[in-house]
Length: 379
Image 1 (cartoon, one colour):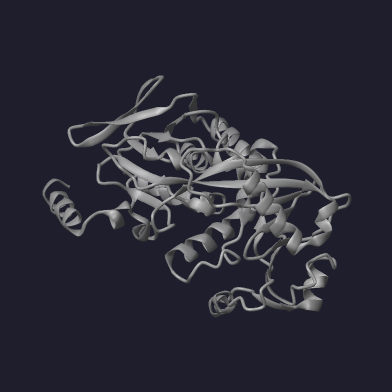
Image 2 (cartoon, helix red, strand yellow):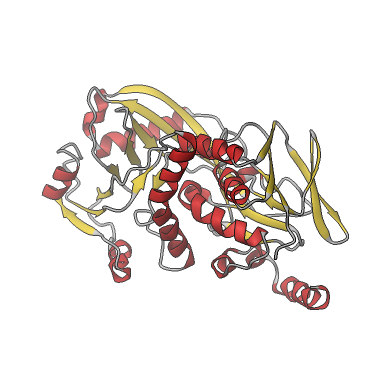
């Protein structure tokens, strides 16, 4: 039986709230320290794509994890609505990727059929059918992923926060983490600007701010993403439509999200003229009729990115400290599966699915050998 009775989570985004809900549901005493308010950063700013296939990930551990995450969404969203009364907006809309250059290589998508996943090649007439005749006339070929979909990221994060609270999790908002407290070779607490919080296990789920402690480095940096919201006179698209340069996400209220930039500009979360112009230019190229849509607004978020673009999940080099960060573009998609696997890890299991995402992949081989020898002596 696990000796872990309490877990401290740093970060109240979609990952931290998902994990808090999962652990609290297993009877663990959970405290979440959040620098602002749950969901106030990248989580609520996301477009909410649940798109492991349209993302074009190569076959391997990350693709498998993403497919597993998508498979959990129908039941997960139903559970959240039952617990909180909030419809998080999960819809299997399908995603249509259009080739505007005439030379995009679709083989990476079509290979998904080998895994038994549905992928449909689309000619001009099929594209017109899927988009109600509104896509760019230049889009003569595309590929459609009927199982991919969307969720309302803001509603999702709020539902997760409320569900975690209802299960007994404690949230301390406005508490910026300063450093991990390590005693006798184990992480015992986190020092914040609102005091020090102790627990049997600590999880760093602080997103773009995960590298807050220089003494326990995790290679995560922010990548800014800007999104524009438009409101056509009438709802235009029945499914998500994307090109190499942009994606268009229809919302139930008739608005349309246009995203997203990828900019390495540090922690600058501004919306810029260049970013908005680039998104709108790409959107109008894909769907020219959007020229008459009303501009509603724009915002930006900071995604947490690791050097190789994969999340960093599981044990760190410090006993008692786990990582759940670096999800980059796939934090919303991977939230349910991350919560399940990290809860297992926090309670003493060693899920094999986490092995490829270990922070150890960024350590020099000689350090890994030393740590392995220490584990044999002291573990």
